[in-house]
Length: 274
Image (cartoon, rainbow, N blue to C red; front, side):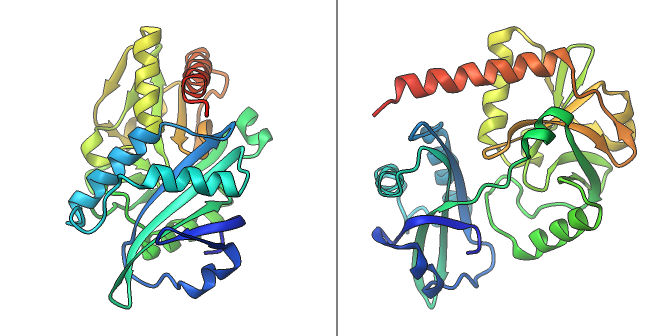
């Protein structure tokens, strides 16, 4: 678990030094996982993450094996022991040597640099589909393929295209496009139900911004004015290009949504202070 940081982790509810994570080798296919963001010592949108986790457990028929009930308390204990004020935590659930394992740890987030937030990020297209995109499952083969293509192109993210030529999502992000002050994003059934995605759509309702959830043909992306990615650890970051197609990174609507999302986060923190 190369992305583990901090002093402590939780293994099946036991607090252990993070140096002991190496004893718990992650070898199974498709472990369930979840990532939460921490701001000012608060786990953001905790209920949304627990609901998504519960849904994933149901999809893989683990709902009778593990309950999400104790997890919020365990996570709060972990960030308290690690003195985490800002960052991210990862949750992993899998079977190893016929035993069910639940491992939680503070992780090094995969986020844009300050400069990339200003200038936007470079992305590439990749004709690849997830297996069961609505479930948050770690697929090591998928991750190696996407990371390899991203690194080869010196890009930040890969935008996935399905067999019918439609944009679905990023390899670790949801994606939005803007045209004439209207927001567009692919249908939920084809993508991971991102928590930031859900809250961006909530911000649009607050701001009275029209949002269209509809199929987006990859061949037609040049018609859009702007595009951006969303995710738990990267929040909202503008895309400056997908392959050779460029986008405006100073789009007024995107800036309004970013400001509105920031306000939503501040409200959440103020109502969930310890």
